Amino acid sequence: MLGIVWAFLLPLLMLATYTFVFSVVFQARWQGQSASRGEFALILFAGLLVFNLFSECLNRAPSLILQNQSYVKKVVFPLEILPWVTLGAALFHTGISYLVWQLFALLVLGVPSWTVLLLPLQLLPVCVLTLGLSWFTAALGVYMRDLAQLVGVLLGILMFLSPLFYPLSILPPGYQALLAINPLAPAIEATREVLIWSRVPAAPGYLLQLAVALIVAWAGFAFFQRTRRGFADVV
Image (tube, rainbow, N blue to C red; front, side, top):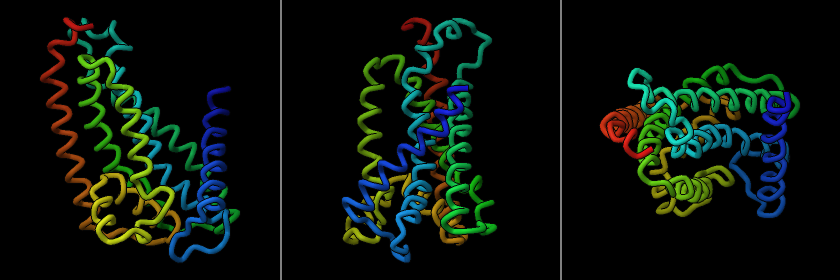
């Protein structure tokens, strides 16, 4: 029971903190956004839905095999499903966070547009990308025991290099192009389009995201299958 309560409280605490720091202290604004801090909070929270889904899985991935050593020596157990389990848990938490977001949005923005129904479609490339990177880091984490610390640092850097707390439009063109390489950036922007601005993201950009995610997933799965042969010798 406490876990469910915490799943609701944690996103609210994060939202309150980030909203104060970036809307009051740094006074960040999105184009077309009103002066309302409530609207800023919704824009910020929409981006965090994507980033938190990604970071929850990647934070846990390096220790997935080490925490499930009893399964490693069971030849018939499909170790490759462990990242799927982590993703399922992260999606559950994302669903709870979305419910919190939607309740707040009803108070601030009113009745949502039909485009909110596109959210699962927008999260699909993120889920596929996350699976691929989880397979890769889960396998690598068996051989590199300090990988979890490195991943935590990299995710912290990625958080500030993603358009979570500021719009890409405020950056100089050169930096905009550089940050656009971030695979989470288009997903964050597209999520805000369907949730906040009632727009359907461009199909070419979405298909490119999905194609890149599928390539990463294929490479991550292949790496996992190739390296799993040595798991039992290491753990």
